Length: 101
Image (cartoon, rainbow, N blue to C red):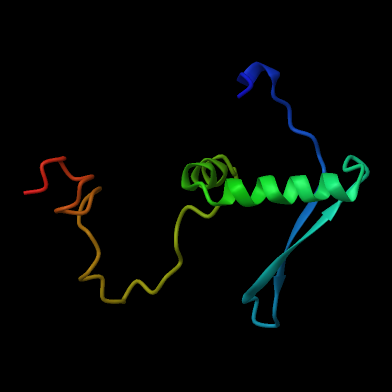
């Protein structure tokens, strides 16, 4: 793998969410610009994207560095939250203390 100093991002096109009239996500479309020189190049990009999307850490890193990502929900404040964990960590999980008592 190359070191971070040798990496650069190149604009290769756009990613579009395909939604219905109710804004329900139906799929995703990709359009490429002139920086993608061939159909083989487009296949390589989509293949690489697919591999990245299957990596939870890559997904998390991309979401976390998105400056306008939603950080608060706008749910119903009167809803029943009895199943929600209290505090910062859910009790009884490995993330709690590591001893899982």
